[in-house]
Length: 286
Image (cartoon, rainbow, N blue to C red; front, top):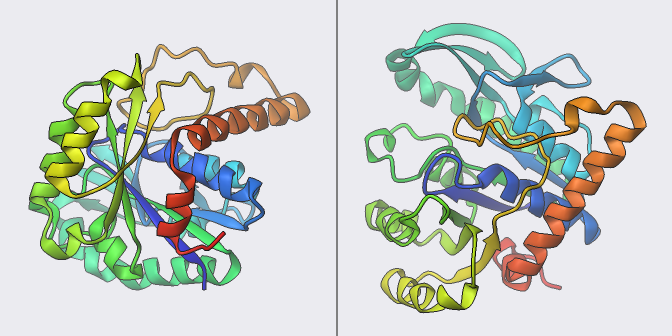
């Protein structure tokens, strides 16, 4: 079975999707067969895999970064909003049914066998599976039936790294607050923090990082600078003003351009994070 690591975030748009993509690329560059996974994804942006099955755009992007073909097993549950309180449920790549938010919340546990089957299938084929969470693990009102954050981590016994977005402010409070709201067994799973989207002199940040580590007893694995990589990002809170050339290219030119962007992302993240520690967290000796 594959080794596993999970990336969660303090908020939506903290940088989970690109962090997973970067790790997939780095592990690929280092010679490992790696696959992304997200048990449940809520988005209107989907794509079709080679078997004609529907999945979230983010997992397709992460698969590209890993050098493999997108596969609906990487996103067994896709929720496509049909209103403020309802969504179309796509299960294992096929339309399942429309459900209200309250009905789906009570139905979540029925989804666990589908999640386990998809994950285990990938874990048998790959060396490493990099899991992405959704929103925040500190949504305490949703904890009971959680299948995408700490509930998912528990399901497959995954160590967790939490990403915080410093660009929007309040990153120390959001990371410390997240740890405060986690249950004891969940806190034990958290093996590191990543500070994302930093602008400025990192030396000015160091006293805060030290205090954060003292308060939470969790190691900061690195500070990733704000990057302008041209990679599809499905998040609803993404910067819509970001200039992109993806839709101006096609064929081989598009493929080469995407590959260059994944390499730029991976290079930046590799230089910014303690990859030796991340391999240790993942359970791989190098």
